Amino acid sequence: MMEGRCYERHDFQVLVLQEFGKRRPRSPEETKRLQEEYLRLLEEIPRMWEEFVEKHKNIYERFGYLDVVVHDDLRVERKKLQRGRPKEEKSKSYRITVRLDDELYELLQKYCQTKNMSESEAVRQLISELKWKRF
Image (cartoon, rainbow, N blue to C red):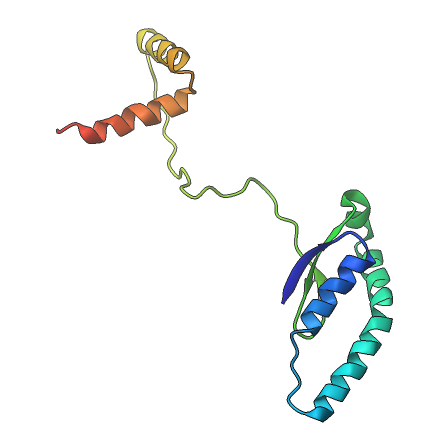
């Protein structure tokens, strides 16, 4: 299976032919059959590209390219669009809320301004300093 971004027919052709090139003949007859199939594929690729672009016309017009997946049997499909923010390696799974009085809130604000960081990052940093203290 091959994946790639296709801006035009040439990109599509290269992708399909790379996947086709993975096939290895085991006999002279199979070599001849693969050569014939290769020539037929060269003639068929422009039609395949036109049909593919027509099927996904709205995305091609919006982005100017299509992300294509070519399977072993030379079926082609559009790679699904990824949505949302990319996942972080160490995701922050826990959310806590804290109520602070005026004095503590002002202290947190001053700390954040002097260290030039967000409130969340300041709280994370201060909590991580606790692991060095013995209880």
